[in-house]
Structure formats: C-alpha cells, structure tokens
Length: 634
Image (cartoon, rainbow, N blue to C red):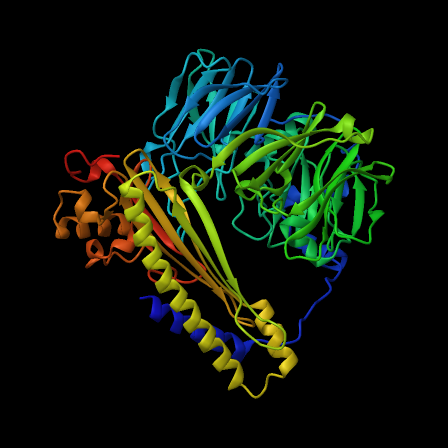
C-alpha cells in the first residue's frame, strides 16, 4: 500500500506540472459601486428602503461575550472545551467542573442567561442523529436538566467527512438560537424554565430580506464569519447584518423599522471573501493585504477612509475601549523561528508594542475556524488560544503591566486539547532536504516511542521501529522518483528545480489519537506536496495496541461479530452518511480500525469514497452497535 502511495505522489506532481503556471498571478478587485447601481433594480420591495439612511448611528463601547469561546461573569470565566463545561476563578484560575461529556465539544456551543447556562452535547458518532441533547444547568453546576433530547439537524450529512454542526449559540430576550451553516433552530424559553421549539420565521431571522441570509447561515463564500450573529447585534446595536451572493454585498437591517442599508458600496470585489471584513462597536474595518486598514463608522453618513497603514502584515486579534489589538510575526534566520509581536493601535491610529516573544511560531492556528474569537479581551487581560507542546491551550496576558513595559509572560489558563504523547513517550524527528547544489525532496519523519516501563511497551516500540524502517524506505523511494521527474523535465531550469524542491515536502508523523488504561491508538499520518501541484495528498494509518500485552489488535480481535456482520454494519452507516456503501473486506484491513471515547472508527483515505474536496472520511459507530468481546470494552 505504501509503494502505491509513492506512485500516486508522482501522478499528482505530474498532473500539477502540466496545468500549473510557474509564474504567480495576482489580480486586483474592481469597485462594487457600479454593480450596486445595477443590482438594486432587482431587489424586492422590502429591500428598496436602502435610500433611507437616518436610522443608523454610532454606539458607545460595550463588551458582550455571549456566544464566545470564553465568557466572563461575576468573577468567573466559563468555557466548554475538551468535553468539559467548567468555570474558572478569574483571579486564581481554579477550575470547577460543571458538566463532562464523553468526547470533545465545540467550544461555542454554550451561552448564559441570568442564573443558567444553556449548552449542547453532541456525541462523536456517525451520524449524530437524535443523540444531540440541549441541556440547562445553573452556573454553580446544580440543577442539570435535559431540555431537548432530539435537537434537530445535527445528524444531517453535509458532504465529505463533515456532519452539519452548530457553529454558535446565542440568546436574546426569551429566545435561544442554535446556528449552523444552513439555518437556525430556535427555542422559546418558557416561564417554567422549559423550552418550546418555534419557527425561525417567528424570530429575528424572519426579518432578513428576501434574497439575503444572515452571517453564519449561508453556504456561500459570502458567509462573513467575522460578523456577529443576529441576536448579538440586535441585543447591543438594534440592527443586524445580512449578505447575498446574488447581489454581491452586505447590508444591515434596523430590527424595529426594517430599514435596509448597503454598507459595502465602493469596496473592492475582494471584500466578498469573509475574512476581510471586521466589526467593532462603532466601526467596520477591512483590509485586503493586512497592511492598509480601511474604516467606516457605524453612523449612516460615514464614509470609508484609510485608518492605518503598516509596513508589516498585521492580523486583527481583538478590541476593547482603548483600541484594537493586532499580532505580527517577524521571521528569524531559522525555519519557523522569529519574534511574535502583539500591538495595540488606539482609535486615533497610534501604535504601541505590548508584548514580544522569541521562538517557534505556534500562534497561527484558529480554534474551530473562528479567527475573531482566538483573541479576546476580558477585564484586565487579553486571552488567546495557542497550540503548544502541551496541546491546545488558553493563555492570558495582563494588559496594564504590558502597557507599562513590565516583563510579562503569558499565564496558562487551561489546556483544552491535551496532547497525550508527552505522557506516554517522546518523538524523534528525522529531516532530509536539499544541501548546497544537491537537489532533493524535503522529507520529515516524526517517530513516536513509548517510555519503556514494561515488556508491553518494549513490544510496541519494536513494532513501531520496524514500521519506521518501512517508512524510511518509502521516503527514499519518493525522493528518487521526485528527482527523476525533475531530471526528465527539460522545461524546468536549474534555478526553478531548486525552487520546486524548496516548496515541496513529504512528512510522516506518528502521534497518539486515543489512549486509555487498556488501549493505545497510534495514528501514522502522511502528507506530500510536490510543487507546482494543484494540492497536496494525505493518508492516515491506524494501529491499535493492547497496553497490557503489547499486541496489535485488529477489529475482529475486539468484537464478536462475524466479518459479514461488520461489513453490513459499516455499509449501513456509510449509506446513512450519503457515501458509497461498499464495505467488502473492511474487517481485514487493520489500518482502517481505530477507537474513540464513544465508538469504533473506520477510516477511508481521500479519494476512496468521494472527491478530494470532500476529504477523508471517518465513520464512527457506537460501541453498542457491536457485540464487544468479554473484557475488551475500553
């Protein structure tokens, strides 16, 4: 199988070389003003009130973290990470667990109102179906109540390996909103504390003009994920935003009068990409290149103007009453080394550097795909999410001390996605690549080894060492094929060959995907990109070990089902997910089998069941669907 993957690397490379243009191409967006004049003629009558511009005004600064990844109230910080709903003392950071789910949960799926926290539990099985539960619990952890054990839509298959999941929860007055990319599920909170499901048309979302969708409920590239939700905006501003791919722009709607205003007229077409538009309490900001930042006040007569220009790229982090916060990265001499900088630019456009840190740049990943919520200001601290050796973590910086120039260092708030590798063992990395004039394919092999505390650990390490030798041979073969392709391509100059080598990579990484007292699952992930291919390729192989004996387990070692019963069960779940349901021989392919907290997983690599865009597929079947052998349950 590994040799077949090497051949596929070469195929992808050749296909990319045939269609790629070696020269980078950039384009400039055109103005939307003319398009606006044309498009407004086709608007429904309800949208034609855009000519009335007296309904919108500036608002004072406010802080509202409802629906955020971390929320603060009465001296406590609340979060829902790693399957744990908890609150932290804002001073001591002491944690108090309020609820614990079996698997990881989306950190935005909770919100607070008066004495209660509302949240979802979505089990990590395929499809999720009727097992998603809406809960309510008091802020001290008492009074846990299941409000709806059949939350709709969470089991709907959205294509690829993706199930439609709620991306945010919010509450406005007596209505609870659960938002996902297609629609909104709404509940009215009754006086007795229960809930009743109501139609979206009977809520604020019923005011969205025909032809438009609210941010977070659109399946187009005009999603505007950085924009606040409808209930958030109405609660604080009195109006909300909506967008339309058909018309190509963003509007805001007065929640009382229904008056509509286009707020993107005159901006370049590149604004249509959702990550360029930012929102603060009194202004809209956008930047195409992260160097020139444009600003428009929320008041109706405000015009777009240049607010700040920078020689380096600035990535928006958060804002408070004092100004806006940006991060920047200054490259060092070594790869992934340099200085991370945190700036604050006040509302008058004056910049101050608050913090700098040398070392590896691990701040680049967004949790759950929400850049606006990766940094946020609560009280005297700026909080941020980072990926470290410990795993996904939340840190905070004291702003007042940083502003005074004090020697501050980030304080760990919590670890929400702990990396179990360091507890069990260590990793050795072997890298190869071009040296001097020698052109070679850059490769990296990350080898995981267990601390040998017994015979079982030594047996697992012996298995892994043999596996790594096979992968070393695969990498050597990939380098040989890569160099041969370059040598046999007369259209590529020597300098271009070196550039291709520098931009290409093949990496193989061993990591822990699941661990319990009884079992260990090692994931060998592989990624390759040969420039100038259209995209990279990736695979995963799983290895399940019994930690008592050191033996590797296959699926049929774990369950008492026959091979035919396993195939039928996997086929049923594939069909439920809208995927090709052929599962012949699946039980005899141990690299597909893995364990999770809630079920048995079957892995399908990219292209096996559908297109590259759909990605790899993981089917997770609950343990109760199988006949687990006696004594084998995790």
